[in-house]
View 1 (cartoon, rainbow, N blue to C red):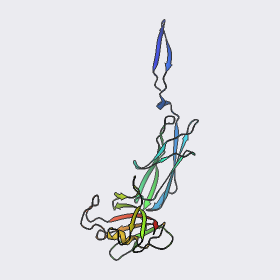
View 2 (cartoon, rainbow, N blue to C red):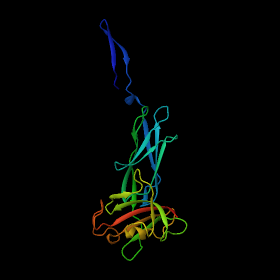
View 3 (cartoon, helix red, strand yellow):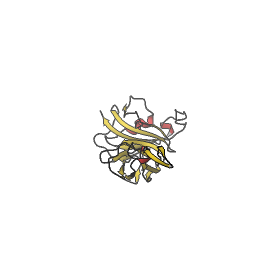
View 4 (cartoon, helix red, strand yellow):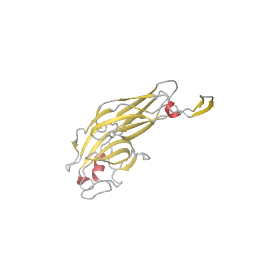
Length: 238
């Protein structure tokens, strides 16, 4: 604890007049816990992370919780009145993810972090969709008629390379769901074909071979001859 001292001499004694509070060091301690709705999932399967911030003293903490995946920020969620923050995610690539929740604190409550929780994600079971190597895997079933030529779709998607590199996502900060009309919107062939038959509410993984994607040409962060993996959730059809 640090103090600023104001003193005056009184004979040989020194009298303390004032101590200045260091708010950062005197703030109330907190403990942050993290619970995952599941510890293992398929790609595209929804996982809910719930962080609880418990003050070690009186009062109610305010502020935000940062959800991290192996040190990378994936979401920043405000604390609710119950001292919790929840975050849903389905666009995780296959592999083991180390998830932590970090409460960023405010003027009265100190920062704290949860212990890491492991999330194991597998790719899912693909079924051939066409004879040229396109494959799909439905992770969450939808309802209603399947998407067809001429339908206007609104969806969320995340695109990966096979090494797990994320090259694009409608879920990125500042983005919104993607609107596309099958057959008229300019898309790579594999993505268009992979949307056929999707129902509202369905989450599907689409594996697109190079011939159905960008082929021998590089496209921005996508190298030439890349196999692409998209996690897509269909929000609406009109």
